[in-house]
Image (cartoon, rainbow, N blue to C red; front, side, top):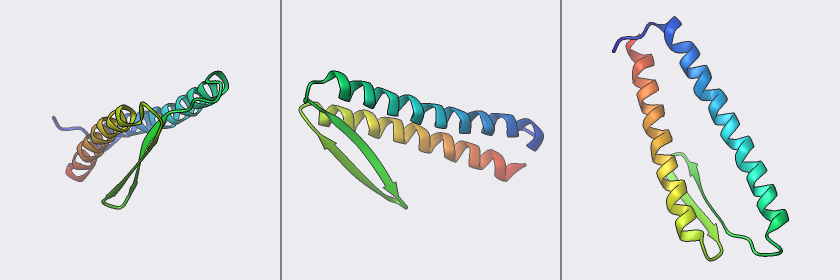
Length: 90
C-alpha cells in the first residue's frame, strides 16, 4: 500500500491526537480511581528510556496492570515502526 505524503499527514496527526486523548483519559481514570478507592491503590506502567523499558507497579493487581501496559507498549511500537516505514518510502 503506497501512500503519498499528503495522504499520510492526516493519519499521523490522528495518531498524535489519539495519543494525547489516551493520556488524558488515563489521567482522569487515575484521578477517579484514587478518589473512589478509599486508600487502596493499584497501578502499573512502563517507562521507556531509549531501548530500556522500566516496569513499575504497586498493589495486588500490579502484575496484570504491568502485563496490560506491556501489551499496549508493543502495539504502540509496532504502529510507530509501521508509520516510520511508510514515511521513509514517500
